[in-house]
Length: 523
Ligand code: AMP
Ligand code: MG
Figure 1 (cartoon, rainbow, N blue to C red):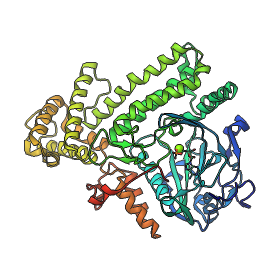
Figure 2: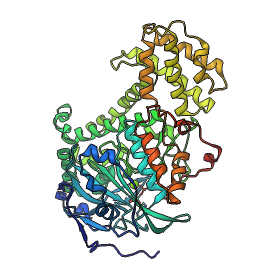
Figure 3: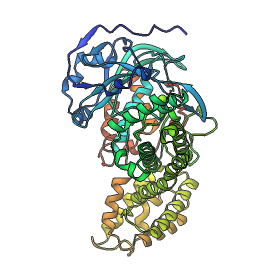
Figure 4: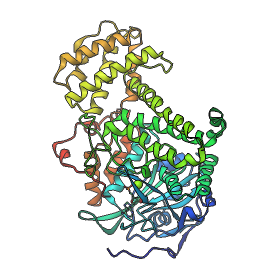
């Protein structure tokens, strides 16, 4: 393939400073990155500007002016930014893939914000020394999906990289068909991945590995210092421990909202436990634990139900990479064991919240009984292939409705009418089986206040998720030059637990054509 040369000189235009920059990553030294500038993008145009994020970060409104359009497209340099691409390696689909790196994401630097320093990357900003055969671009289709999904995840309260802006262009890129390029400006405290550690470990460069771990601890995970006390003062064991805990928490939340990432390679795993690299992801429609959202994943390695184990496998890779720093094999394995006990606790808590069974300090016996209740429900949901999001939301609604037929202080176990469950029983074929489960559930809810339970459930079970067909509609319109649907979806997804009257159709079951959508790695 014939691509334009790497851009080591341009762009020539400077955009005056709106941000205060620091670049702590650069202190790591030249073996970690290659300085280079974005490749200019033809005819850039704002497709979305995230005003909410801009305000949260306390960044000036200039950031969305016409000069910044050029800068966030890669056509001009933000004064004070020091663009570069970082190197990493990783395991892809279970195999060691060797050196990878930011193949199309260009790091602009780290800018001060109201929420602490934030790194900014332009995804799709041109080739880098790590592009391998790729063109360094991202298509509008996948960029819309990343923009919307990262904000949807944030709206759900799930840790994620954020999306500041989306720039469309007329530049042509070839995938399965000819498409146009776009650039997402994404923001995170750090874009470090498991793969960054695997890279220096594989090179046998323990000094760089240690420098990277020290950087991560000093600037991004300072809590490791205190945590080292648990591990005989071993701060690198504490680092692994912190990462496994964040990963366990993240995976529990993914599972609880029916999110499939699709490409859980170790280079797509954030050290900070953020959801990162939105590709062929999917919020499940009909519930199927074996659901595979990535059409390139022929073995189903990254199927929904396998995600928690894959995360453990990935943590094992990270552990192997930093084992020379921990320098104690038993301790390393012991830290990893933490994931096996923590993940079920986090998942159990997330599922109990979905059922309105609150109380984080529940005794062990209660947790176990609740888990049986959850498992039985999930088995039933799978046998019915019932729509995941809708089922949970309708169950919440049913509890709210039941509570309204009782006096406000009535305990949940009292006088519930089978008819009162219709919002959820209407969704399934085997109503007697669901009613039997609901009877156990109400008995368990016992003395809890039903109204409070319903409120908790409405805050734990979203009405709106970024279903594939919703993204697809926004993509089709954007390809025709109309970006309004992106904004409509963004508005719904940033507060997915709210009712949003007038937008009911966005919570509907997917239309028939959605079944034909094929989402692959190609982006
Ligand atoms: P992913 O599967 O999207 O995580 O990508 C794996 C690796 O391929 C990463 O190093 C990416 O930066 C790189 N990559 C993916 N797409 C492209 C592209 N169009 N051009 C250059 N590099 C790419
Ligand atoms: Mg990636």
